[in-house]
Image (tube, rainbow, N blue to C red; front, side, top):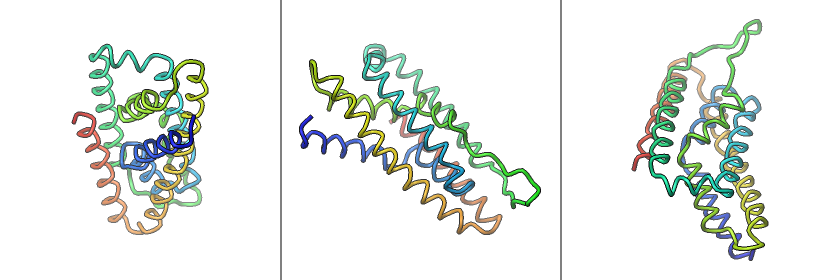
Length: 200
């Protein structure tokens, strides 16, 4: 893959990865509620889910979405329902002052972050766009998919760390129960608003 094409690929993936969406809002909320280190598994789950979607798209499943529009509609419906469920969980997360003898609440798990990608139309469109626009034909196809995979991993890592760090900083500023509740409800509403982006 030529350097100019690779730079274009990075630009495309970066814009898709850094802009607000379900993944980034969930990372911000998790960072605020559980801290950076306890939220890393969520970020890893998101990254693994994105890699899985990329491989599925690269090796044929993505083409089914183009051939059968009903599958795309089904994906949108399931993604919308999952996002609304996540938004509800975020918005209604209870404020807990951690005591030394109390078990801390659990952040979103690795498998949940991965599952979100399969129901996230933005993930499908991002990987479909990357494969259709930046893969090379013929014998170079597999090599170009490997490069796309590496680039996707890189941008998701950097964007994930940024959004997770942003959430962690916000979490340190949320000292009162009122501020905590306002933040969680706001993030829940923003997560629910991502449903509108799915259907535009």
